[in-house]
Length: 485
Image (cartoon, rainbow, N blue to C red; front, side, top):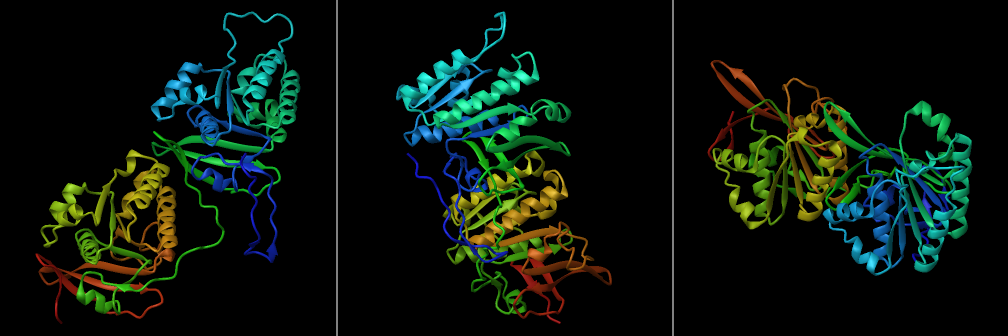
């Protein structure tokens, strides 16, 4: 049996030392969801999981059963709409071998679908189903029960009053047996929900809503905990993804900044810029390089990348504008050969088309890349392209979480942004993240007679002295050369 999780003494940032005692919980095994729920779903109680088609309700319920079964705790899936063979096949596509767990008597797929040809005479009762379920729970010593599409059962009754009566009876029956239960129910029209199924939210101890929505032709999925009786929980909406391995939720539930302090200075890869920065960038800080098209932003980022790799560090380059092959080829012009760094394993370039996925999928891939590659530095090129993930709000959410993840891990994060060159420091990022940035470097073009010259200025360097002069430079086959005054 899983030991009930309790939170230890904690310091409440809004008040004095408090002692928090949560109810017993069972982990779901869904990455991020247990963080949002403060440890998992309520043990021995009923959780309602509502959502529209394709929102992930059934997958979440099944993932809970698999977590329990793999830990040695048996579970039962009661299906009112899908066939057992279909569930096994869909699970197999994710690498989940349900048949193996069934053979070990750790999982039972109970097909409770009503024969469409059946004629209901008199009052319908689920007593027969409950008798079967009771025997299975006893025989398997089942700890978990997932009732998928319980609303399909409710539609068999002839009145809303009867529906409520039967569901309350089912709720009490499950509580009497002490099993941890998930009931999935379809989200329906809001007006109908208020009159017909509003009692579900009041009845359950925990209510979770999932949905998928389309913004600017980009589909995103969100999860929100509506209530959790006897426990604290994350109250925001959280993006999540459904992929070949199941569901991953990307929470940001802490109300306390846990950023690491800046580390030692590291070279920018350009001697004269290091001098302007009083020794280089601070390790573990956020750097913004903004500038007009062709001003040298990517070249400056790649100079830093090469210097970091030559120090034996790892750099993850997230490119939203070029493929790795195009980027490597284009950087040969300023004398930067990135291919040896890639071959050595110190540089990883990941290119993604912004509009190909919703923000939650981009977050998942970026954070997964960070976890797998374990970089010392992350480059995001370019944040102006992140708007194509759906909206400016989506771009802000993506960048805020990437910056937060980097600062919590002590990773230097360098963001590139295409700008007009006339912005103030407050809006130079264009997406509202300037306050999260520690160092801001602006690149711009300036007309000088019949020629166009490039200039660089350090607009901000938090906690450090820096040059306030405009530095004229050229892009050559040796990198960025300072033009002597």
